[in-house]
Image 1 (cartoon, rainbow, N blue to C red):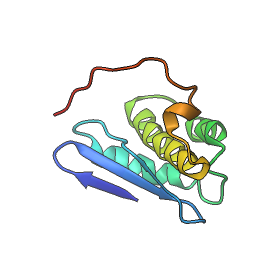
Image 2 (image 1 turned 180 degrees about the vertical axis):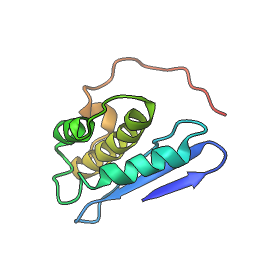
Image 3 (image 1 turned 90 degrees about the vertical axis):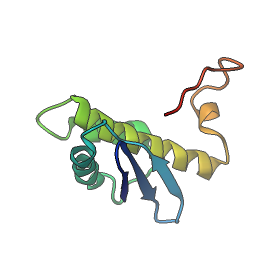
Length: 113
């Protein structure tokens, strides 16, 4: 499911068969509807699949079409990827940063709109 928040944000929600929900943010400013369509098209590749197989699902989504890469496809895949990692973290009761290899710095600079 996608949620557009004008002018520039969009979020997606993936829910597993077990009811675990993961969230991602797949957006390119000014192209939210286009990315939203790509997310929905890619969603067909996820139905019935094991959400913990993130790398395999990424490859399927990336290689499924004739044209690869580009900002629309990559933004859609990135948002789905975020949601799948969110699901995996919730299932394993671990923060995503830990699943990706652990702490690499004690602080980071942040920005906001």
